[in-house]
Image (tube, rainbow, N blue to C red; front, side):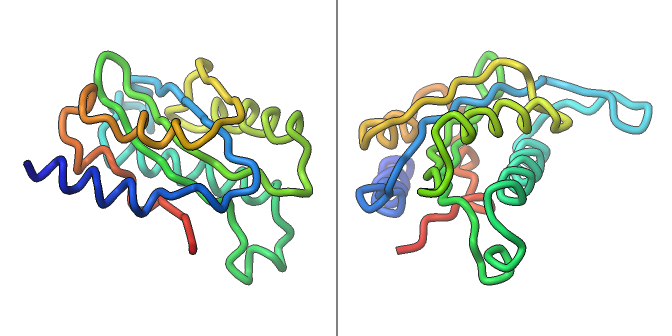
Length: 156
């Protein structure tokens, strides 16, 4: 019951009707990687930190320093799925001054450069149906943990 209430609240907060150019992004993660000589397995914390690093790289390429100082950054609705292979489903709003090709190329360049970024990814424009899909309850061991609120950015 709690998951259904949380899902409804998430769907309300994840409204993309005012977005200019939303993109559906699926980013697959390495299940483990070597960091400082030891093997580290992905979990919700490392996944969120890795995604945050990815967003920082992307924002640095998409926004001028002066824009970032004033709070300029991508609108982002991220969800972690931890089933067979950990991955992110996210909705990103492409800035108006960036072409589709450049936006896709930046995502394809930056995700694999992160510690847990894996080469498997999909990036395509989307509509409002993507948000209910990423908010599905199945394929998540814990729905509350799957909502990556630290990286969520959807100002009104």
